[in-house]
Image 1 (tube, one colour):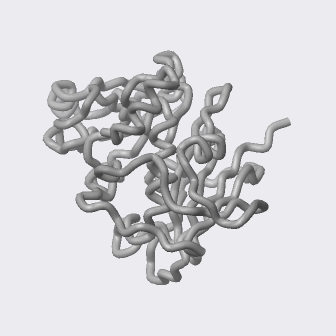
Image 2 (cartoon, helix red, strand yellow; image 1 turned 60 degrees about the vertical axis):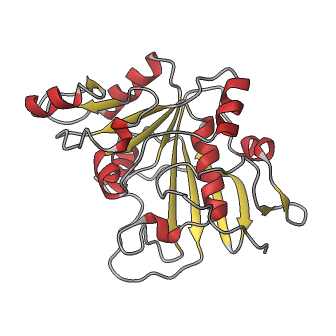
Length: 270
């Protein structure tokens, strides 16, 4: 539909795009006019902070449902996807990620670009969102940049059964919060974040965490990027976990750029 810019030099798969502004490529809104450049105001209208507490999940998947290419989600992404990705991080109070995703995707520190930090300050928000890692076993590397280079101290949600030696190590670089005894109680974790004023939560996975949040009936929104690729192979789906009843969702928005679709769904409530 439009020609998108090449990835910025120094861009990192799991972090903010280096030197990138909050305006970006042209996209088509369905229904809507011809493609036009989308700036931060337009995107934040489509991905708003909600008046009520919201847990929003953001994922990318191929046309045939694959969640990764050669083990990494970056192979499914694009500059437009990175723009939406960055906007969702900008508007949230806390970014919630599973420990496995932190390890596999090699998450770096949650450092937003200067224009995005300016937007947050202008809207009365802290300069950076909270970084929250969910881990039952605390199998995390305190030297990884998500901890060692963090602009604010991350939070790790864990359970009482987590190894005490790992807890002691992580407490040097993060605040470790116990929610649950044998397993991480996600509902209690979400409530703990709400008590800290973090009511706009963004989850970037992985699939096991998404599945567990769904099973716990905690997911309010799904922002799904559909990448125009057929991947095949044995790549997993975006959510996996215990079975449960389907949850009805309502389509709240569609954007498109370079054959990618950006879908936003929200819970259908009485």
